[in-house]
Every structure is written in C-alpha cells, then in structure tokens.
Amino acid sequence: MADTAAPNAAGTPAPASAPVDPGAEYLNAIDSVTGAFALDSTSGRLIGTAAGVIVGCPLGAVTGGSLTIAVPVLTPVGIVGGCIVGGSAGGFIGGTIGSLVTGTGPTANAMNQQYNSLHSKGLIAQQVQASNSGR
Image (cartoon, rainbow, N blue to C red; front, side, top):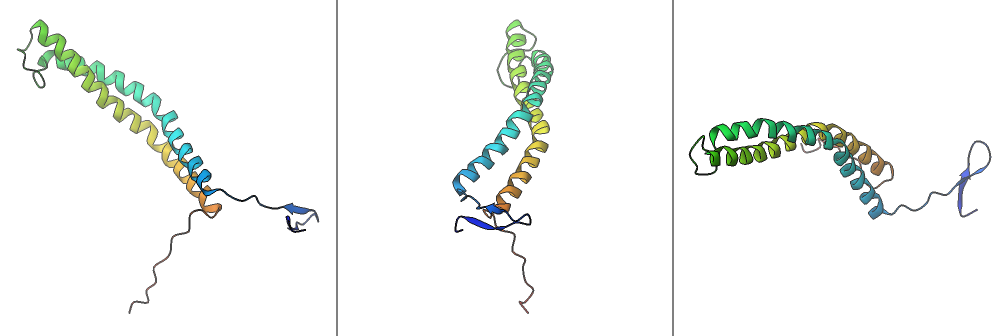
C-alpha cells in the first residue's frame, strides 16, 4: 500500500497525489493571467481606438498637425497631414486607455485565482507575520 494514501470514510483507498511540476504550474498560471487580459481587453481596445481616431482626426485637421509637423494651418497638406497624425495619436491613446479599462478587472480576478491555486499546491508560501519581540 505504498502507492495509495490512507482509506477515506467509505473505506476505499484514496489515490496518491501526483507530483507537482513547479515550472509547469507557474507557466500555466502566467498563461491564464495573460489570456484573461488578452481576451477581455480586446473590446475596449477596439472601441477606444475608434473613438480616438474619430476625435483625433478632426482635431488634427483643424490644428493642421502644427503640434508635430511644420505646415501652415488649414492648407490641404496641413489638413490631410493633421488628420493622419491626430487620428493615429488619438487611436493609440484611446486604444491603450480602452484596453486598460476593460482588461484590468478580469486580469486582477485571474491573478487572484492563480495565486490561490499556486498557494494550495504549496508553490507559494503564506506571508510571514512580523513579530513584535524587538523590545
């Protein structure tokens, strides 16, 4: 009976626990957390990018892109160049903010779940409480 644990309440022997591979467990935890962010941040990224382009293009066209390129305001080159620069900058900022807004909550939840999983398998130790014996 070296391969099985003590019998349970029903009298049948419980199966022995399989050895845990720490490297595989950590990689699975990281994959779960990154997958949660990747799946849940996509909708925010799309909406944020679209909103950023919609706001950034007209703003860049009106300013003529004068904040980034040396072109006179309200000329054809300034309007087109400003729209391209403003739209791309607005799309980048909007996409970044949108993905953070929609991906942060699920990522925090996945991190908590994976921490608990690794802790239950003995791969992460519990926090040590500081003692007040320094008197």
